[in-house]
Each structure stands twice: as C-alpha cells, then as structure tokens.
Image (cartoon, rainbow, N blue to C red; front, top):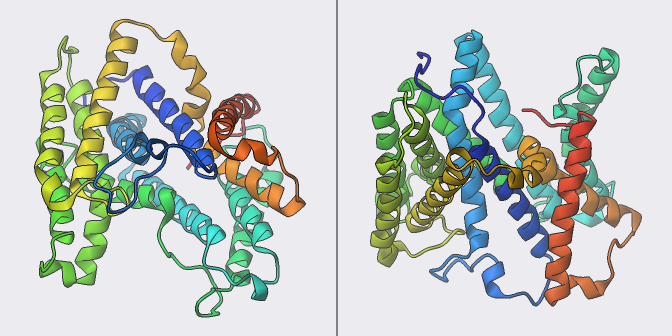
Length: 397
C-alpha cells in the first residue's frame, strides 16, 4: 500500500470534536437507559417502530468516526516506516481486543446462572470491566517494566479465570459465549472488515464507494424474506457485520472526499452529494425494510450516515474554516480517551453493586430529575477523564 501524498498530515480538530461529542452523548444515553419515565425520543426505538431517535444515531456516529480515522491511521504508520506485518499485527490486536471486551461486557449483563457461580455476578462484572484497563493502559515510558508486566499479564490471567467461573443460565455449561458481540465487539468486527478491504484496494476512493454499495446490498439481501443467500449461515454472519461496516465505509468515503486533496475545497460538493445520496437511499428503502437500529436495516444505516455527514460538515465549517475551536475543549478529554470513558461507568456500576453503595437517591432515577442526573454524570465523567489523561491513564489498543 502506498502513502497518500495529498492526505492532510496535521491533526483534524473537527474529527476529534465529533468523537468527543459522540462519546459524551453515548455516556449520557447509557446512563439515561436506567432512568424510568423519560420521553420515548430519549430512548432507543423498539425493533418494529419504523423510526429512530437521536439515541439510535449514537452508535452509528462512533462507527462513522472510526471510518473517518482509518486513512489517517494507515498513512501515519506508513510514513513512520512500519512494515505490512507490523501494521497488520496492530490492526488484528485492536480488533480482537474490542471483540473480547465486548463479549465480556455482554456476559456480565446477562445469561449467567447466579446460583451456580462461585463468585457473585456483580463481582464477576467488576473484574470483567476493570481488567481491560490494566491490560490495555498506555503506560508511561518511565513506568517500572516489572509492574507493567504484572498488571497486564495479571489482567489477562484474571479474564481467563473469569471465563471458567462463568456458568451459563440455559445450559449450565462453563464459559462465556457471544450471545451478541456487544457494542465494542460490533465496532471491532466492522473495523476489521473495513480495514482489510481498505488495505487490499490501497485506500482508493472509488473502491471504497464500491465496498459501501456491496455492504448495503448484502444488508438488503440479508433482510429480504425468501432470499437464498440469507439461509446460508456464513452469508448471514458476513452480511450482519457488513451492516455496520457500511457506516464505517461511509466515514472512510467522507474522510477521503474532505482530506485526500492538495487544496481544501471552499464548498465540498462531493460530500454534499453523498449526504443527499445517503438520505435518498434510506428514504427509498424505508418502505421495504423500515427504520430499525435493532434490526440493522439499510434505512437506519443510510439515515445515520447522512446525519453524521451533515454534522461533521457543520463542525468542519465551524472549526477548520471559521476557527471557532475553544468550545470544543470541553469534549476533548473524551476524544483523547474514548475507550476508558466508555468502560469506566461500568466499573462504577459494578463497584456500587458489590459494595452495596447507592450513589444517588431513587428520586433521581426517574423523570426530569433522572435526566438531569444523567447529564450531570456525563459532565463528571468528562472531568474524570481530564484527570486520567493528566496522570497518563489512557487505554490504547
């Protein structure tokens, strides 16, 4: 694969801002999920609702950002002189880490037989959420190597032990299973599928557009009743991950249209055209498949891609062109440490369950007080990340 000579080589603040905003909203809606008596537009829509809320666009926004970052990540490693083996080793480790963490998170939440487990599900969940922090923390260069190895290999050993301490609810068998891959696992699969293709085609724009079309087509076939390919388990597996890979691919396409050029465009008609195309595709397919995040319909993926494209264009105009950047500093702690801020609320949750501590009274678990608490909690997490970043506690896959 060749270095992209025209790709921007400076930090794109608007991408960081979009990442930070997405993570902040993700923490907010995750906390809001445990609050009762909140409006439907602040929740995920049911599978058969044929509708989506801003909550249903949060996960796609993260996929979109992953896609936008891929060209820069590959270019940076190529410029650094990394070999193909080094790049692929890093890529596979990152995808595998996301999948592993995602599966452990899913099993911590459901599917266990508490009566047969040696340790309580709450303690199991606490270890499942906490160990990735020890394993994938980006330790400082002056951090004692013996302590680093102890924490990392100790964390791996604990996860292995947790596997054998888990008892499945339905079968009574030992060991966790991918009931579903979890948000991080789905991101890991979508990332892996997209970067493999990106490498094969050398990051060419037209080839990534073709991949996007193929991914949407596979999604359509997989949701079409009576389709022969749908009955094949291998196709269903691939098409399921291509559903999310289509949003990652959309991010790659928009990133290349914006930044793989010598001179920035005053008005990027290509990006505007794709925003319209994404919306039109979603609108055209809606009568056949509906809009559903839970089902992963093509209308949901395309409307999400359109929303992300428009939002990023606005941020690009505001930050890169108009140079209004100070406000974005509020979200940057999350942008710099997205995996840790995603995991940490789970650590807090299971720590409270294990210790029997209630952080807030029940009054703040419903209605408007609950919404306010979810917002306050999200802000607190941003400041916690600011402290973690200061003391070099950062997860790096």
